[in-house]
Image 1 (cartoon, helix red, strand yellow):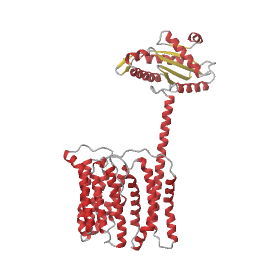
Image 2 (tube, rainbow, N blue to C red; image 1 turned 180 degrees about the vertical axis):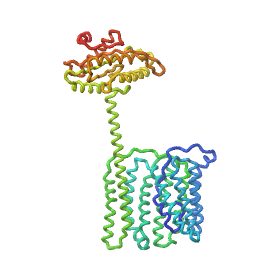
Image 3 (spheres, rainbow, N blue to C red; image 1 turned 120 degrees about the horizontal axis):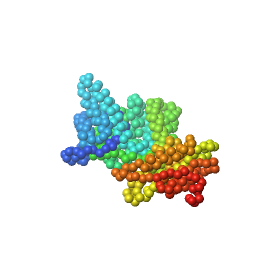
Image 4 (cartoon, rainbow, N blue to C red; image 1 turned 60 degrees about the vertical axis):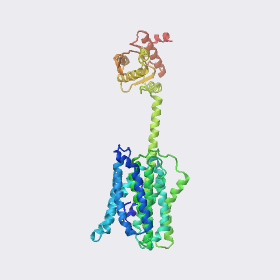
Length: 523
């Protein structure tokens, strides 16, 4: 990412640059001068970087280009800091890590080129800067990948790693072995670079306001990987090979990073996407199986050929595939868990809609009938069971005078007071309109429902304050006690309903207990 010693391996550490994450909020208003600078600064920086890259590639003079590369590295650090100030992203740590990466690697290059003992400090500074760059781009990538795309991106990374093993075994390995270089550093950087390529190949097509910055970072990853490939080739052919191409890619890598930080879309949020719950298709399954089997199969072929085999790349590739597979399984379990939670939530909503009144939240007729039926069946011989039917007196006047919204609010308040009048195991339900019903299973004696009825009449008679209005209402209550011949919940409800209408006919605001003599007039 930042300027590194020409011909060295230091900035190969940036081969796994991932795309950046985005701040979740928009930038706050800027001063007028900065606001005018914002839309064009990134383009000017990119144009300057492209110009330097083309000139350096044409001349191919590494010593002459090194001061310009160092200066442009410091300019990229400044561009990132200016971009943070311009756009004020909520998550700025990632960008600060990238700025530190550019700064340290640029200083590392300058120190490494100086005479004396300080030259040994340069590679250390460059290594620390590259590590910070790894961390910064990792955090950026995490925020820029929509959650619904993670499974597909992990699959692409697994397949890319499997393909990388083939590329290594039959393409790059001979160059590394012939040059007599150690393969561990190259392998550690080569496979993450392929994974990064798989990620940016998908990220390139993501739509949204963040797209320009995403594509600039994708180009950064491509150029960083190109530098890695050239470094491997130069290790075999000599430091003077492909100097122009190496300079071109190094300037471009810096240009893309600085332009991305200066672009107004630096803090544009990535839209959330629902995770895909479709089954893995046959083609994807075959590709994943290939990626898992290619490492041991290629190693076996290499070993049987009698050629010298470097085990390090296969170990690195195998470990990386294992980590990605574990991440893929974790993503699958996460998606499955979210699906199950959504299913349970939906079932809970449907269950609530089926058995509870949408206005008051009380059990509806179906749930009340179910509970009362269970209480009737569970009643011990001689046990007491009662049902109370409650109807508000002249409730229609409230709707006509104050409107249905006030009437609905009054029904909710009445339901809350009815719940205060009963025990925890009793059931208060709304049958519809202004009719409520209560089941009292396991009454200690036949006086309990009468006491509850009196409590209900007292609570309902207290004034209600609804939307600044003070309303006074009354209720009529009918009580039905389960007798020795009662064998159904519907019969109890019918008797309580009859008693309630008798109470209403006798003057309202009172209660009555069902008696057989009430049945004929009610009919």
